[in-house]
Image (tube, rainbow, N blue to C red; front, side, top):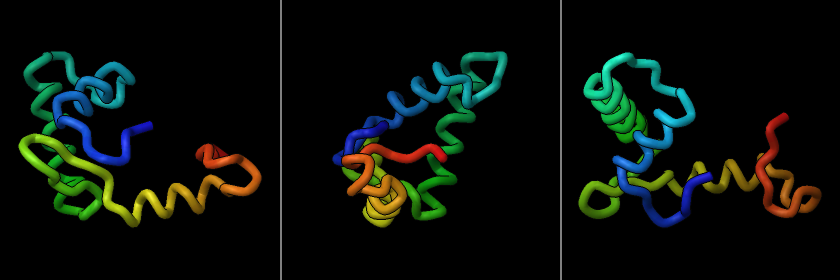
Length: 81
């Protein structure tokens, strides 16, 4: 899904737009909405600032994803049940 180290905020927003997770008709509004979502996720403690305009998932989220993947049965693949 996302690299463990860090991702540029712009890449996240572009990915969300490509996956149609952000539904705005205007490109400027869509990018603005994407950056607003990033700020919400940071405020909620789900994303952390790393350096520059890069963010990463909080370590606790990586642990939760690992547990949810049922590691022994799925070899570290995330479950979508």
